[in-house]
Image (cartoon, rainbow, N blue to C red):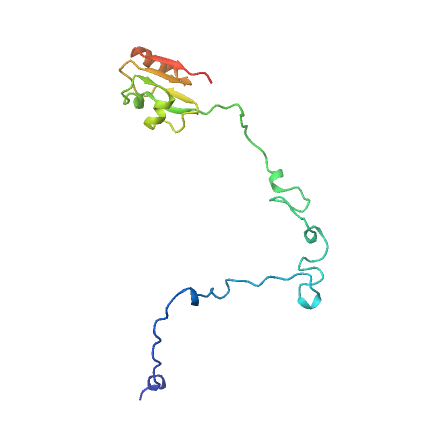
Length: 165
């Protein structure tokens, strides 16, 4: 005995519908209706206009900063502050002698180093460190040198010039 479902006639499949600007519709629920406020009590949004009654949040122009706790001392102000931020700190872009040894030019300055990709910004401070060794005499212009780097450059017959900012 066959079930009733199999006895029913199957619906013919609908032909694929053409998609175009003429038949596009926004998905259901993607557009919300505007909430009309203050239009009488029968609208459901009358009298207090969905803001509750009285208080700071019911007023126009209300704005509190992030972390505001209604006048209570905020948690961010209760947390202990630690450390020290030095506003006079100088941040250098570091270049080692081992990477300078690979460059074939005789005069190295921040412009050349930026061109070769050893530093990111030629306008920022550059410091040469003494890791590795340099064998050829080279004139290096930088904002700072470590003691070992300056010694290695002089030992190779080069010059370590400090750029004043």
